[in-house]
Length: 61
Image (cartoon, rainbow, N blue to C red; front, top):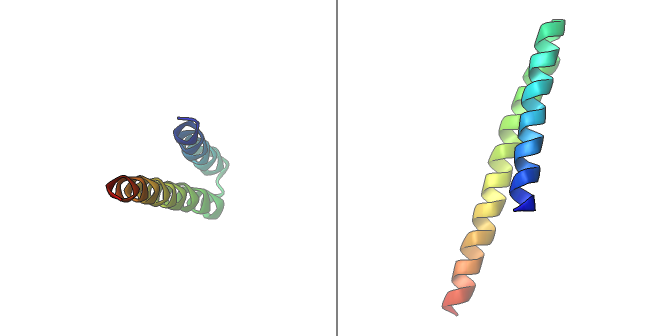
């Protein structure tokens, strides 16, 4: 559960950082924060899915 909490916290922080940078007019950095949030969430989802699939395969053995 802690893993999911950390993933959500980092994703929300990236979104808040993006909004803050947009309000300051720093579009390039806001876009980088947005991309980081998206790719972090994608990578974390893949990692969690991989662990889940590995666990299911291990149960079959």
